[in-house]
Length: 183
Image (cartoon, rainbow, N blue to C red; front, top):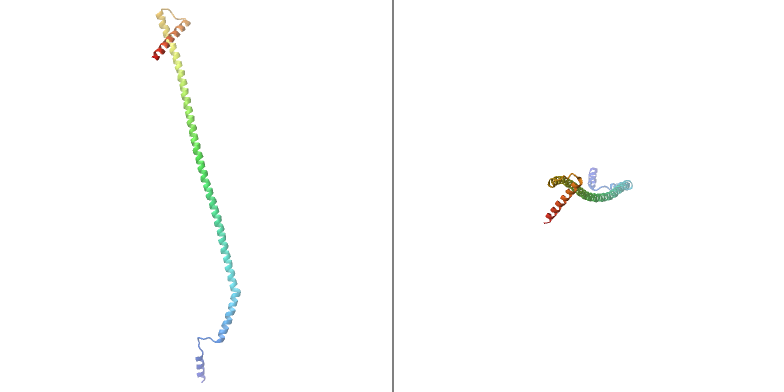
């Protein structure tokens, strides 16, 4: 019967249902394990998470600060670039004005130089004209004296007489030229 009892007791035990002592021991071990994890492991995880969160937030704050600095620097550089462009435009405009002024001055100098050259030419032409008139008077005087001497039949060697005759002859020629020029 013992074998029947062993078989019967084995039949009474269900392998799917644990023994009550195993349940109690499992709950105690689970409680101790839970308590140990909560006391030592969870605070370390929380500390690590807090450190990472602080590092990330600090990194984000630093990145935002750097971004703000970069934006400010970019704005400053754009302003400097704009000022440089304005300065370059101002310098170009000044150069254009100076160039126009230099051209005007050069034109004025060329005009005055041309006027001076023309005036010098007029003076030189007038001097040559006077020289030609003097030369012609002397030549006409010599011819007139020689001709008058032949016509009159007397010699006009005397300087004063010769000069009077030449002056009278030229005066008559000028008077005839001015009356014929009026008609």
